[in-house]
Length: 111
Length: 111
Image (tube, rainbow over all chains, first blue to last red; front, side, top):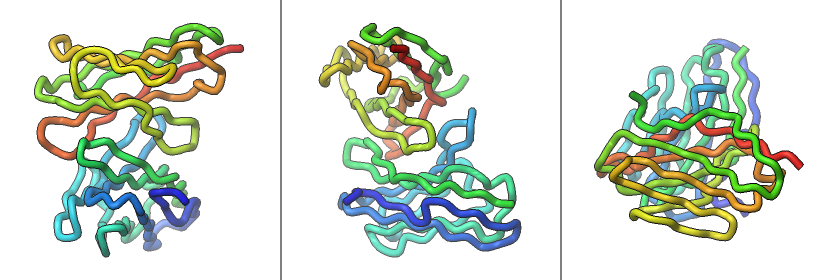
């Protein structure tokens, strides 16, 4: 089984809808991250969490919120989706040395 | 100046050749460096990590780090068409458990 899983893998939604992307991990890591990737812009950090009680904004947190329900679960929400949030979203965990391990990604399209 | 810079490519090499991918970074305090491989539409996969000056070899991959010159490189020996992908350089900045990613170099290996 994959160490980092994301659901859903693909989602098409309409402008204004609330969307939740979920991430689960079995690696036992405390640190978890949400990124989005757009062509030509690389990976950009949305939010990160060092443990259940520690959540931090990344470089592009506007329009997003997160919830760390447990050590193994970290969810990303788009409260009111807009078309420019169409992107590939990745969840990741990191080990003690800082190496990050990515989930398979969610392809989100906002119409 | 971007914190982590890579040539976007594409870097084209024939099958069997050595592919050389380069990355420069701006934070002299950086201690941990990583290379990821990303196939189109897939998630980044960690292939090498390096923490001290010099070379680190793993199979056909060699990572090279020169902290004085602030660059890290990845050599791929005996390149195969299956190595065709985008290679992301990532640097752990200072004491924070966050990685800064370059935008990646696209590698094309022709049969």
